[in-house]
Structure formats: structure tokens, C-alpha cells
Length: 182
Image (cartoon, rainbow, N blue to C red; front, top):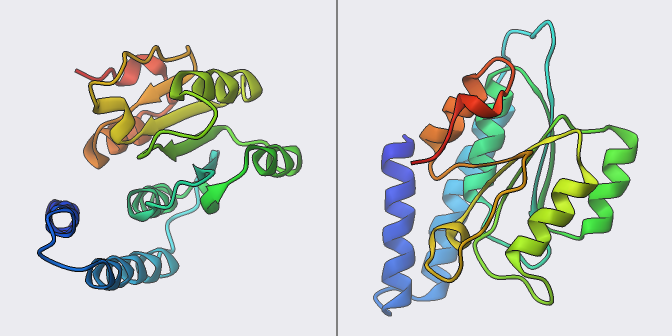
């Protein structure tokens, strides 16, 4: 279904940008897809893992494009790992509060838009330094635009597609050698 849904959503976004559909139509379709993913997540009852990882999934402040992250949540839960899904527009201090209660072994986030007051590079360094004991999986349009080269800290993995995310997820130890983007 990801080979149909996500290309379809990209096409909807393109149609909205050129005025073929209005924002209400784009929101309607996005929310239908969102509901289907949430129903899919709620319907998962995977085999318990002997040693499940704790995943923290979130979008940074002012980031609202959550369909891809919701799908990552589905994939993580389907593998039997623990998921802390915080959703859209999460302030950095809230991440700290959650991590104090349940430290994440893996953090997943996507960055679609540039952030106010901090560069993507600075944000990644802050995330990496704050969560030094976590693997951090990142994706999003800002990493694949031609604005500036972004250097990934040592505990950060960039994935471009859900297929690549699954490859990282399937690696038993989440070794950084398990996947390197092209």
C-alpha cells in the first residue's frame, strides 16, 4: 500500500500547490489516509520480542506533516518494538521530559520545513548531543533539497524512503553499517 498511498499523497500535494485542488480537499484526503494508518496501528498485535527497543517518534516544533511518521510508527509496532509516538510540533524540552521517564534507544523524526531560529545542522547536533545513547533516524525534504550540505553526527542515520527505513529496522543491532544512503 505504501507504493500507492505515498505517491498519491505527493500528487495531491502537487495538485494543491498548482491550484488544481483547494486546501480543504487536500486536508480531507490527508485525514482519510491518517485515519486508515491509525486504525492499522491499533489493529496490530505482533509477536512479543525478547528484547524490544524503545522508539520515540516525533515531529519538531512547527512541523505538521505527520503521515510519513505515522507510517514509521506502524512499521516499528509491527516489528514488536515499544513506541512512544508524540506526534506533531513537539518542543525540544518535551522530548527531554519523556526521555527522563523512558529513555529511547531509537529516535525517529522527519523535517519537511526549515525551522525558525535554528538551522537543520544545529538541530541535528543538539539532538545528537542530547541523546548520545540513542540511534537517531531522520528523513524529510530538507535533507534532499539543494540548500546546503548537512553533515550527519555519528549517531544519526538518514533514510530517504520507507523501504530504506524498513532496511534499518530489520538490522538486528541497528548497527550504523547496516544501511548507508546512496
